[in-house]
Amino acid sequence: MCIAFSASLATACIAQPTLKTTQYGVRAPAREPECSLVLNGPAEGLERLGDIIVTDEERRAYSDPELLQLVKPEACKLGGEVVTATSETFDDGIVMRVRDIYVVWRRNPAPTGPTTF
Image (cartoon, rainbow, N blue to C red; front, side):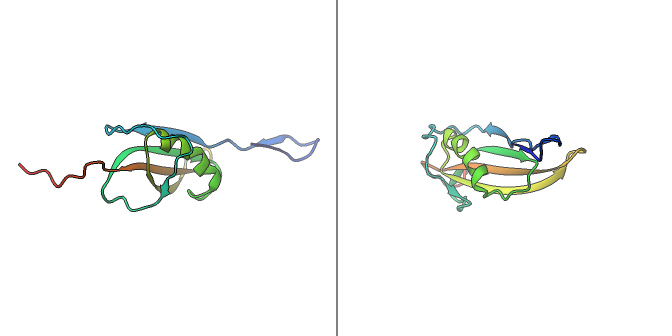
């Protein structure tokens, strides 16, 4: 996003958030890009499908509607049903950045008890 302050001043640009999606060993069928997701629902009885990491220069809450609209298609592509989210701020040596970590889960289709041997 770029903002022009005036004709005589340079345009200031704010970098768009970047997404990095990591899928884990559990595979689930992809869902439609506008699927329904639960944000920060209980993770009990769920399988972890992957993570979506959003890095941003703006300090926004992980529940910011713009960020959720970026994350939603990725979470649906992973087959997600529930997304849990956390945020952290870090200094990359140039600028303070915010990293939002969205963990994508699905309901375990065949819940099993603990493994015994």
